[in-house]
Image (cartoon, rainbow, N blue to C red; front, side, top):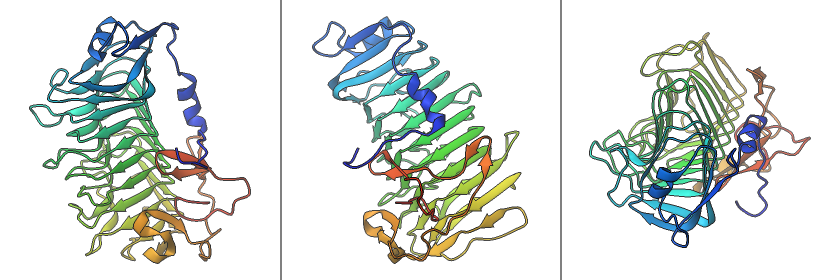
Length: 381
């Protein structure tokens, strides 16, 4: 976290943080200086409810399957770096998780490769998982979550990228048809033919993140191919000059398979650096609700309107409207006439769609002080 950043949690994250630590209170120590020296050994010995504290360092070829419930894996003394080095668990990735209410904190997952070319740093197959302060680099897929409506996934302050070169199947984060995805304070970047974040979840809360392809060549930056309820607030989303698809956000491109299908784009900053210009939003299927409010749009001055959408208080801006666009500082300049011009975007399913925080690089949050004059875009202060 950068100096001066204030990490603050939204109410929907408080329950996740309250779960820190295993329910049984038992602690297993893992690493070169302990009797249990590898994660593979820890996975074979761990019991439900344990906390596994992993000594900082590199763990090469140390892959594992985790079926236990209420398990917490936490790096101590620095980062635990899981280096695949050609190894994989069950032909799927570095870690495979199937337990309920699992937490992984402070790990790096590097270099996952498998024969079918979709090796993941973490493969979430069943249960529920909270990821906190984890990094995914040079994997065929950063995280890959399966298709199970009972799965819930929370991603907090994580870094996904750069991804391994691929042929359109390598996604920085790919979430299947799960119950709920929550992503906050995370950084998705430097894609390679696949998407930065792709989710088929029934419910998606994507708040206060940075999805910037930068010098990568991602396809979509953010995609909900099967619809669902998607609350997308306070994100900066940037398409690179070398993108392999001219859409930043896509919804319903593979058909709507969820009971409720709503997309709420609130207080985001969308930046299109494609030389020929791109498309901010592709709606392949008509959602039950489509709301675009308080967004900043930098690129083509085109945002189709229609009777199918609530669309207002969105503003087209140029790169020089930002403090320093070349350094990815997409705050409005202090003298911007748009300061204070945001409006109330209402409440959806109990979630107030007003940004009380903003993304702080890298992978942190900064609170928005009370009394702030709210502006369009992802940044208020």
